[in-house]
Image (cartoon, rainbow, N blue to C red):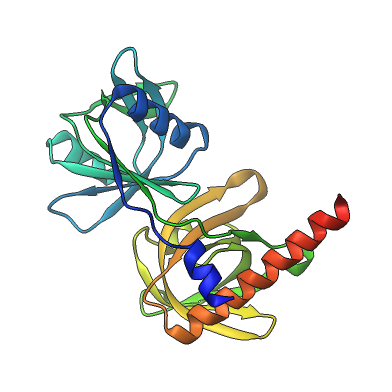
Length: 248
């Protein structure tokens, strides 16, 4: 079981895309799926979240949504070079800044407009099965560690060998920082509690349902925890296949 999962999760070598057609096509996937982007400035450790809001190959232009937190704008205006990284269905899509961006404001929303990247790194990091949990089976989780004043309790929505998606009641975005490693993530799996450090990769508060969604990547997992995760993913995968077969 473990070997089969590891083979399925084997990373592919990165590809460098250099034609406007390839670049715009992959960036458009990030835009249409509303996949979060992480922006990092070369000389700074802080990370900022954004989204692609426009990809126009004909005009050789892209636009990024307002950064969270917004104080990253001052680095942008100062012309500091930066890197953008997003994930779409297990594929890492990343590029370096290509000249300055201009800030535009329309209808109360801000965006940053600039030229299409010259190159984009396309890296199939994993083919791991991402198992979604049924609503009746959602697993209790706690996020804790030195960077938090108190543990935050929520639910596990889906999980793969490399990370998971979480749900929390209310708006907790003010308590968490993108890119931060939280050293005590705990999940009450059916066969025992697992504990591992995680890195926060995605954070979004959905005001309509007063719920915060977070995506975390497992960070320096022990072999024991890795086997626990693989066992749980395998169990969910087997249940999903059985459900599909019964449905058919």
